[in-house]
Image 1 (cartoon, helix red, strand yellow):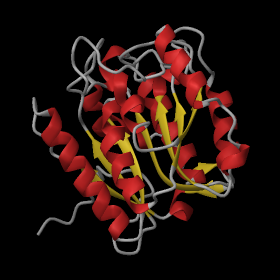
Image 2: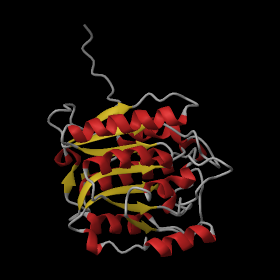
Image 3: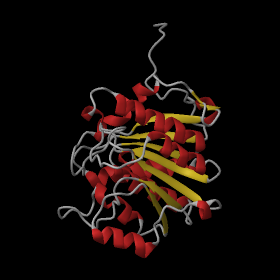
Image 4: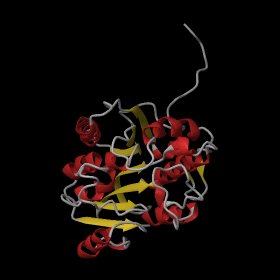
Length: 272
């Protein structure tokens, strides 16, 4: 028998025991509907490796990752080329996480992976609200004739989640912005403190100067500290699920975007 030690391919600071963990992290390596620059399916593995370059302590939240008590279950194996089957697999696994009495933390992958995760969360918590960080509205009814697209994910979620708040939005069609006004999907969150919420972070909410390694970079975005300021506002909210999506690591060969994504995940874990 080999004595090692061996490299750990799970997230730094995770609890190796599923049963005793409060949060389950799940890698969602899917990018089958990306409309611009593909490659987000490689993000979960690369982010895990980058996590080992972080400290496990967050000075902003005065917590260690071990205090979060999360278990990294690894990446789901998803069938390439089969969008609907991939979404079904994600939904079933997230449903099992909630049935086990735990919270969910997803690492994508493109933004469409949020749809089945929120479906499972809404089944467990019918009065769920969604807080959505993104550069793009993601409210299209279809894109190039395809209704199941990462650019339509929030539109699909709006069919079964009544309360959605969008933060950082700076790109979309006029029809999408009209829909935001009609539904009241603004950036106010203070009235959600007594509500179960799911937080979804598309990394292109950050400015391309901070996050060039994403599928659809959009100028005029947040800096890193502004995003973490928002997380600090959420620390007293009842977050029952979250995900971080849309890193395309190969578009930033410096590795900086992947390092930023890992730190965004670490800080969001601190408030879940």
